[in-house]
Image 1 (spheres, rainbow, N blue to C red):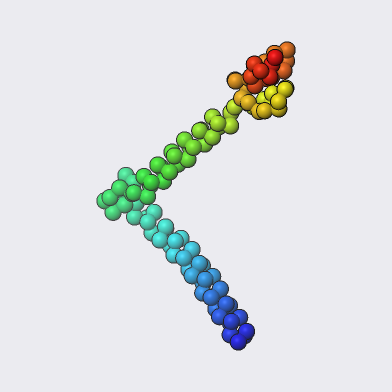
Image 2 (cartoon, one colour; image 1 turned 90 degrees about the vertical axis):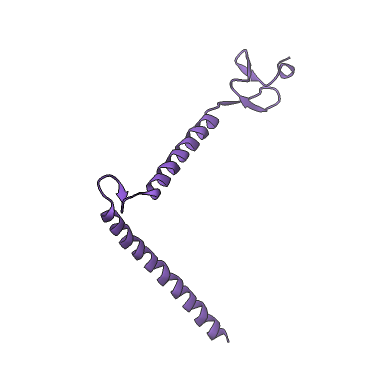
Length: 107
């Protein structure tokens, strides 16, 4: 019984790896054919390439997300000298070289 299970698992792995390899080969072949069919004006068989448009839109969205992350990460955080709470440098009260989160921590 164990032999049968081992053989079954091996067959499944073999089928998976074969399909994966063939899929990669098929993509490389079809990609080469598609690039040959695209004319000088970027049209494929007389139609706009929707894939190119989606890729450009995806790249623009990724760039916007990167910019937003930099804006969020751009805040310099400082620690309150009294309570230890971290606050943005913009909101901190700086007094005698120390940062405080509120007037109650300052006084």
